[in-house]
Image (cartoon, rainbow, N blue to C red; front, side):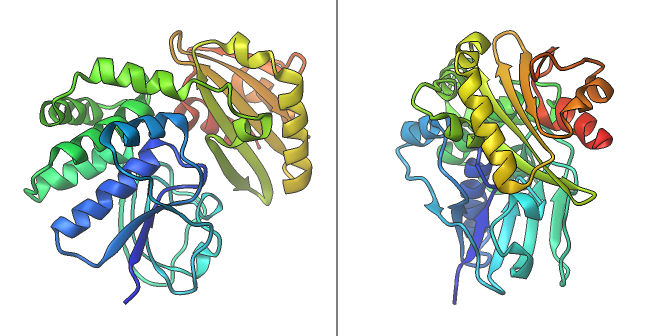
Length: 307
């Protein structure tokens, strides 16, 4: 019998990868269907730091799923962000913390969606509610995901559930989450080895509304100025992406994780959206947003509302 595949969104972040692995472990402990964690893109340096720390391999890379393939989606539910041919797969479960997007199934399924800062917080609660022991590896995986998605609990997406989960996971993991988290986040800000095209896909979400396609991509850094040294080549890569994918908008958010601000490069026929969305005009296709770090809560809702 084919294994059920567990995966997060395309251009996976630490939550997508860690939650996939944790969900596989949880299913095994519950003696559920034979399941296997996979991924829909390259591992970023932040996630690489976590996997190297634990000395475990990254999940297998896939691009598409076969018709009727059983799958479990974590950290996403929008088909535009999922595996190719996902509409023909058999989705048996979803565990997510995002809005409900372009999603429809033929058969009933288990669907857990909570407005938390991280998918792994939901998985942590599953362990606790079911009385299943959390081992050190699972604790570090889930703690890493929470640290990543909440920027060490500093993001406005952070909830009390995330804070409680991270505090308990820290005890089990036997790590200092502040020290570990800072090193992990710093590892993710090393962007020197990426081409401009690769920068756009480190953490990019493909979205659609009213038949209009757009992308919101984000990179974390400790120096917005260093990233902007490559501004012209980044803009060229964005314009290429817009043309190839017929996008109405491409938003590239450069987020300073130390000072909690974002500089955004925005291109496309809908680029003037910033006035309505954020009350600011674009200047040379750029806009600076003080106190903005969360794509999910501080960028996407305002862009989507005005598309």
